[in-house]
Image 1 (cartoon, protein in one colour):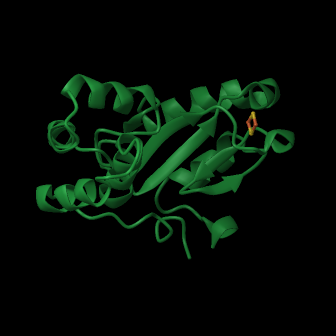
Image 2: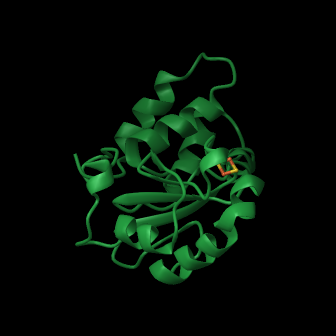
Length: 168
Ligand code: FES
């Protein structure tokens, strides 16, 4: 399986489906976080329209829902790219080249952290530890971990038409 084939399967935003998801969590204690996670797992992101919808069904204010949504950096408000690339910016990785890798990642993809390339193929995110500190700089692509990643390997992983043989 290639990296692109390993991308999570999401469905397009649908208000009826979103409503079903929210209603499935009614009656739970503290349903807001599970609802937001379920929406993101289903659609790949939390559509801005979901904020009002969730607030309405859970009898919360939009500010409450948005506050929780925006507090957790893992929640996205736009659809993710085919490849989700997470570059570790934790201390251990920073000390072995992670800073240079982070700069290379943004310039190679032409986007800042938290953004998706204009062709929709790659979403670049930063994380602050992937649990692979001894083998930094660490990167995860669609959840698959890679250690000791330099600029050349980064480009092989993220640019179309290059070999993903390490994950095949
Ligand atoms: S600090 Fe990068 S994997 Fe832990």
